Image 1 (tube, helix red, strand yellow):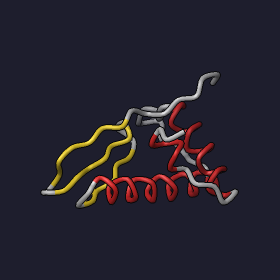
Image 2: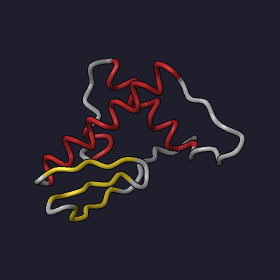
Image 3: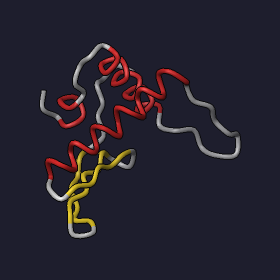
Image 4: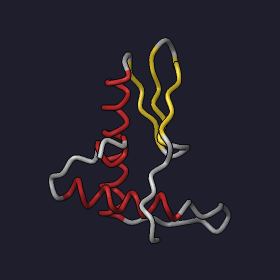
Length: 94
């Protein structure tokens, strides 16, 4: 893939708090936008780390996931493995 891709961010009210969505791929919840962002980053780091360590398998009965998402997870896992912070990459802070 040639271009750098990140799913769009959106914010919604959820159970009296805040939900920050990274496209349809991940979300974070919190009482504040900051807490939701922290939760989102934590969830994505866990998913990216797991993906880089274990890979992923697919069932022939379901659709293949978006390859852009898998590429992004791999990139983010590399950043996290090197001790970097993925926050800027997924929240558009860079």
